[in-house]
Image 1 (cartoon, rainbow, N blue to C red):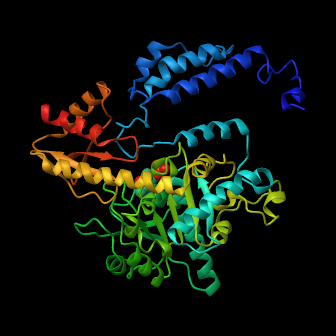
Image 2: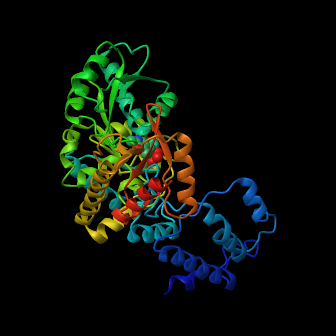
Image 3: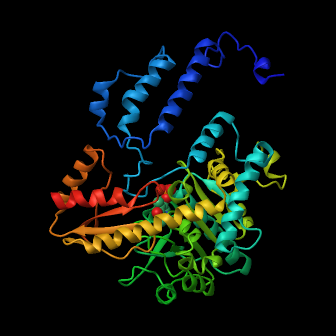
Length: 468
Ligand SMILES: *Cc1c(COP(=O)(O)O)cnc(C)c1O
């Protein structure tokens, strides 16, 4: 029997779940919109609008009676969607963009249509199995032992927090087991180039950050960590960054991991952006030592070509995370007392969408080799455009790119010059490249994670800097 034949006739009080003519029409219109959006090559960059501009363009949309699906969809397509910058446009080079594959985006539609609860094995076994296959693959790439595993969470911020909570819980349990006193304050160490989410995690957890000084290389190294943490009691983790958000610098994971472990601290690797670089033959060696990690994160929505929002969080020993994170309540006992693998148990969350599935489907479709090639192509392009910047009079690299972020300056430009130039680029639908700064000096930067971005795209942008 076709599933639709057995759809219950909804009670008359429910006008919203009925599969009536209007709903079926709306379904086709929504699919058509998705098709139109995906058919763009590329989607226009578009631009942000102020609340006042938006209020002037559209009527109030949340009303007692509702607008009807088609009018609401039209408002979205005509006004709201074009008021969002298209992150997947090859000229979007700011922050860390996202460039989902067709397969990943398509599967995100399926995840949305499927109403899968991804928090427990009992409810989402098939989805969790597929997500776990991806996490196991990531663990293998980084050299973690069999048994490593974790969960896809919303983003790197939540991934870092969840890993650090597991680390502190483990440290506390260990002290209690040994009958040692707890420290006055808990603390973790990381470099000044580490991501802002770590400061945020420290605030949420009410722990201290021990800043590890780094030299001009921008790389945190073991001896510097050793010197910094040796005077502290209560160091429960050392966090290395595998690809800083600004420059893409990978800390010296081998020596930092060793020092973390000789100090009995958890070694967490924040690879939200950069750890994808381990897939590329030419940068694989930068990640030497990541196999010592007690946990790592990498965001598929950054450089693994998946849609927002997903962070892969992997633990060497998932049972430590489970001990820290499992929520207990009588209404959950039926799930938590089974011994099943429940993704909810491995991070600070409970209900979850199986957000790893778009990446799973794309990997299953294209194979890992296509991912290696795509990441490598971004790295090669970064090197090529870096050489071009060095060659051009009046332009300079702030430093050589290590992965796919290229930070550079135009001689004599003030922050205001960069801002005007940036606005003009977006207005002309050429690119979205925002001004930035390093040590107080203004600059700009290309963050290249889209395989559709070409040398020509980037040269065209450089040309606009010369003509001004
Ligand atoms: C982007 C980033 C994060 C935060 O990830 P979100 O997914 O934006 O929460 C953490 N660490 C690093 C190094 C990042 O680049």
